[in-house]
Image: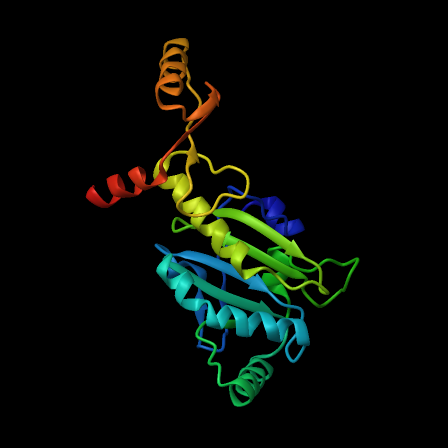
Amino acid sequence: MDYEIMVNGNVKIGQFAPDFEAETTQGPIKLTDYRGKWIVLFSHPGDFTPVCTTEIIGLAKANTYFENLNTKLIGLSVDSNPSHLAWLNDIYEKTGTLIPFPIIADRNGEIARKYGMISNDVSKTETVRNVFIIDDKGVVRLILIYPMQVGRSIAEIIRAIEALQTSDNCKASTPLNWTPGNPVIQSSPKTFDELQKRQEQIREDRNGMAWYLSFKDASSCEAKEKSC
């Protein structure tokens, strides 16, 4: 365990996500149970609250999109498991929506503090709206933090996962406002010879501005990945 994470709950991009065991609405889980899948670990301030209810319903409806990206949703708050169950049952009775992912009952706040989900300047007990995107190797790849008053954008979370997975497959970067199907940015040349070849490619293909900013079709990477 990284000492900074243990003391300050300061989880950073590029670090392995701290493992945990937890009681959830779907029984006990360990984070490592999901190795091989991408994970969206998200916190909500409390059960039976309006913004959280819209988010939980929205995530449930979008769950198929996450599954298609080999991604598992895991929720968390410091409420008890009976409270979680009562809330999910109320959502089902009022809307007909079943929640297909586990919600952690982090009663003592151990996991929340390990991940830095509690902002003491906002609340000593309630979590703010954190999102940790963890890849299939267990590495934290992206962190989003929203205040209690602002609901998250599910579309952006999905877009971010698609961008991360595409950049991994293509060994490339994604530009501003990238969405699936659009070109990705090629890795910059490492030698002068590569630079000259890149400039020639740009002149021929008209696929960039300069040797340090040129694009390629992401679908060619995906096709190569499937054939391997």
